[in-house]
Length: 218
Image (cartoon, rainbow, N blue to C red; front, top):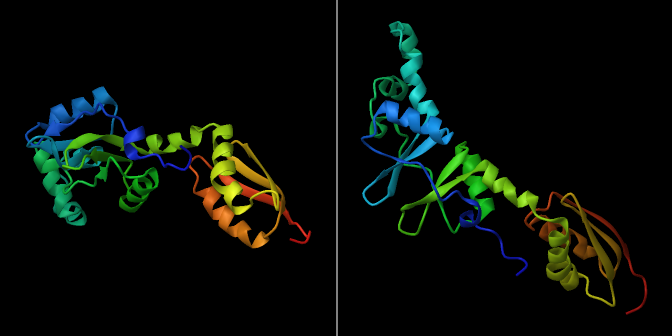
């Protein structure tokens, strides 16, 4: 059905590497290497996400390895100094974790990533249990959508309602995700509305118009 937005559950990775609070430092590093990821969810209980441990959480141990002087330490955040001495995921992780619901739209997930400045989000179900992980690359998959599939949605869900025939004759073409509407319409005041709706269609990169007003009497 056209017009149904994809959700995070459609694009997320379901097989996820995670660690418990007691996971030791070297195990965390090894898992990151094995799974080729830059962050790991930290889970507790039945799979509830307690936090996230990232490469940034691990680096203070290397950065402060050679016992820098007190002046340098004063320039660092106390949390970084504490993490340099941390040995387990529970002490290293950032908490509370920034997560996203599996039912969230891709746009919602993208806004969370932008606001929080993160590249990956643990995905949780309605009970708050870990269901997967979604990355920036996963969210960009929507732009791989077929041009003709986009065109069909714009024709059936937008153009046919805003510019119904026979009073309007509108053609929809899509090339590399760029939608172009051409033809004649009864009411050009609806063009800004069409632009907003077309840009909301998943996979659309941009939208252009070459529409003239039909001057024939109603």
